[in-house]
Image (cartoon, rainbow, N blue to C red; front, side, top):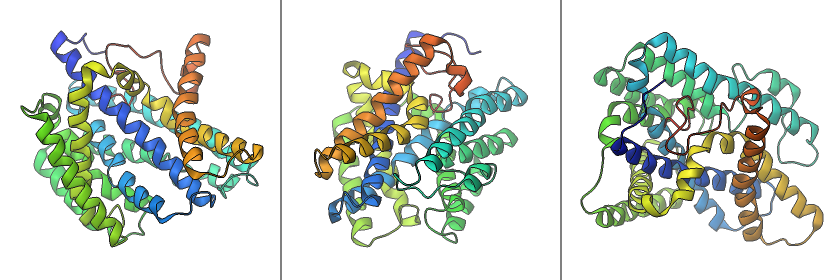
Length: 341
């Protein structure tokens, strides 16, 4: 276990939790948007542009955050590091892949998914979306446990970026190779990022927004894959925007910090919650407005997992679902892969 953080470190971790809070909401928004497009509810071309905007940077952001504390964790010993990541990454990956996969099979006639029992049984080598992130993250942790040498990791990251373009965009191999760069940024620049505090955050935010927006529009206009080499500058700019915003609103956005501390429960449950809300709205026939579906889906995708996690903690069963103990309000879970980002 790590020692209790000093007041300075506690403050630093709080702004990173705020960044996680913003990031996980964007992850939910991206998956809700794709669900609406797949279900022919969102048909406007604007949704495709939004898709590029969200997917270009929200997972790269989380990969950067995931790498921040790797060196610190490894200082306690490689065996302990791997055991910790097995509990906090592999266990929830297995449990929630089985839970979500089983639900998708059972509701195959009512959802956009074509998941089969064969897919559920293949999670050892073929992740069910969105759990590719946890699968890839554990691989990255294993690589980092072998060496955190800056030159070696950078070389591997560059090789991964080049190799990514040889795979089908959006495939697991493509995602695995592309996102390693951002994890390496988190590992190699972790101390600098955690202590980063721009003198003129408003100017930094504006520059980041402009850079991100230009990159976003270029990618959207050219229908370029969000895992292409040309998407990297946009991903970095988007991540800078979120990190800068988190720094600026840290003291007044405790709710985002609170959400960020619970990003793992949200991540593993948001598809179930958001899909459920979409199915209910469709059954009730209240509206066909894609915007309403989107808002309800995002609120459900964030809110239901938070409620479910609170109930699990109240009943003392959260460890049975691979979600560990109740998070500390003063900082991230020491063993949570999402909180350790």
